[in-house]
Length: 116
Image (cartoon, rainbow, N blue to C red; front, side, top):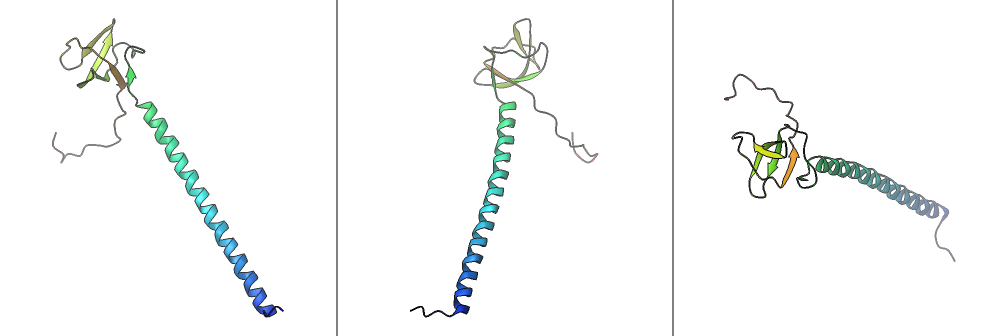
């Protein structure tokens, strides 16, 4: 025989319904968090791809555009024209293994109190 009363049965059913609702809310929150993380990672991946080093043997920047360059040891700003790489500050000829576009400038304004 069932020893539970109708009130006990209703309380058990309510607890099961509440537990199911709580699990559904937790799953919905987990899905929202996963979607947010996925969007963040995709944005991060596209940013990483946008600032990735480019193999100079495969692709050259537009002529006379300043880029960040490396010979595999040093990193420096350089420009390329007529199949020749030159370092920006010295105009010396340089060997370049990889290069990337310079990043955008930050949106910060200098105040008068900052030293130059």
